Length: 57
Image (cartoon, rainbow, N blue to C red; front, top):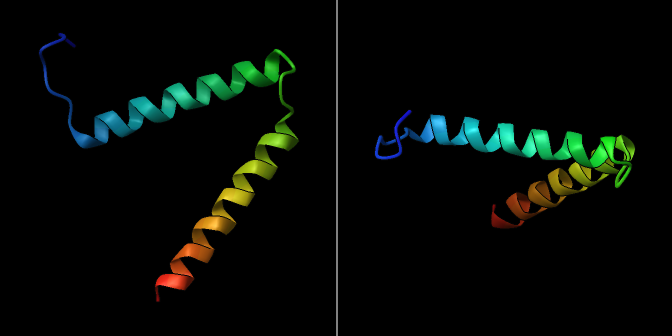
């Protein structure tokens, strides 16, 4: 893909997901965080988002 080529929203989302996934893998491999810590943080985030959605209703 050339620099001046536009990416669709879906392509941007996939690229961002892949970068985040690679970063998480690196943090776990370097023992900066554990997979359990990541999963707990992810679960906390989902709970927070659900709570915010319930408040909006």
